[in-house]
Length: 595
Image (tube, rainbow, N blue to C red; front, side, top):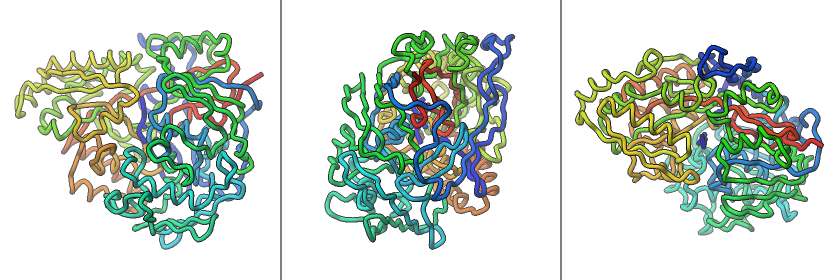
């Protein structure tokens, strides 16, 4: 899943899923720097971060209603304040964590994650009665829809709707969203195999023998398919209300709320969907009567409003507005904010990708890695309390069998090794290269860009900075014919399996695909396919870690970026606010308004 600031959930273990942490200094838990640190806060240490545990639920677990958080109260209006509106509301186009998180309010999927307790989740049936039944060695998956699931107009949700929803993800106008199931049903180049349902052609690999039953027939076995169906990108769309491209602006609700008004980039208001039945939904609590969303606020504004906690902001929170560097010490050091403060290290991998179509010399790519100003960027972000400095592609907090390596000396020389960079550049095709660096135009990223330009200049590398619109950032860097040499991108496991990281960020090359480096290497693809087919989970985890290092050694398609540590606040009259460890965002399912 892509992140706006991508979905690492957990890592597959036998029968049980657990996000494990290879506790690294500065990123082993909630930020609590020592009082002697120039970047830390004087507050008492926060409780240690506990990785999430995810288990496979039963049919009984799949029944509603959702388990309520402690002290829950129904009713009232909650306000969400954040920076950006949502680029996409059509589930087929949803592949960013912020959009996937919002989709939980208006849409449903076949399966989903049920919160059992803080940090504990079960994969359960959402629209389906359970997590599916597999046969034929994992090539065939059968789901049965629950009784009483309806659209916002009261019409029943049928298997035909579910089939249609998957078929439309093949349509040419769908350029974002996940692609796993489409490829499993047809081919890697799935849009050539099937053009979507709008010309009247159906996909034979999906069968609907009756209104309640849907059967998927994959080309190869996929024992973890039930996790893929939980992705917002596989949310459902009614055939009768499908307006193709226009659906992105006016989606039809299957969830607990309906969009009543939407002033793009400013506000959105939600009211209850009278035809959503909590008895069918084990995931969404839907405790507030109304949701009021406000957009256009930088993290500093969000933080100041929530710190002040006055008036209507007492019932406000933020989905992802993490405390900015200039307020971090104050927020961490204020004991009065302790019960309104949320902390969590990022479960994602974050990278500065090279566009390999343009930066073709590995010596230049390696030189940039050595010259990279990791420590300076960390300082801009707020110091060790706000960001750690990883050295591997896979995230140490969410990788079973994690093993550290440091190819480019980031641990020993976090300020960058200018001399080593110059040495490599001297051996390259261009000792004084120019790099066009595209970045998300936010106040913090402006400062990060200055640090990058200054550091690389010391090695003789000229950086031309290109600011991109924040709302359409991923659309811009996702174009194959973009005019940039480097850009930031985040990624996390889409469900608990190592096969959802490296094979995706180095997978098919196409417009909108998350292979932002445009890496094409048949030998690498074959090796990833081999590991994906490995049935021994421990062996597969070890192989993914070894491949991580090999990719950086032999190809160097990216610079490993800083790993952010989120610190967020909520209003004093907001209950149930938690950072979802899978999506690194405050999820809406447990939110309620206190009296």
